[in-house]
Image 1 (cartoon, rainbow, N blue to C red):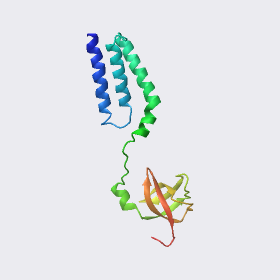
Image 2 (cartoon, one colour):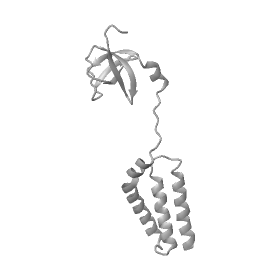
Image 3 (cartoon, rainbow, N blue to C red):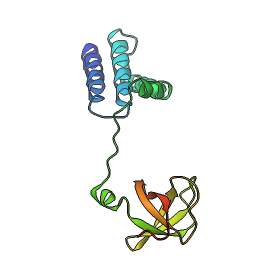
Image 4 (cartoon, one colour):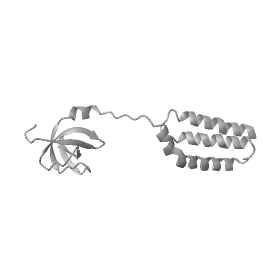
Length: 154
């Protein structure tokens, strides 16, 4: 293949990767694309003539850019995040449960009995002792966040 054709393939491929970043989160593909454009320009200018060295340079520049600039780019262009409760969680919120292992507000080592099984639990504030009642507030990953309630509540 001709030198100019290979250079344009690198450049067009790099631009395509940078555009693809718009559809995929992560801020990695844009650096791969930028590296490909750099390699294409160096190929076009005659600085690189071997495709093996082009691939090695592309990999090295891509890695360097990702390591050096990804965190900065994520701060400048934060991805959209949303948190949505599933229907079962929404139905469970407010349910009074029994604490089966002491719950604190720092680590999810506590356990509750809910829906016939044992769940990890974390207190919204303070400590809830074993045998006491707690109210489900929301689920954080696989742990329920609960608050203490009176023993007479059902």
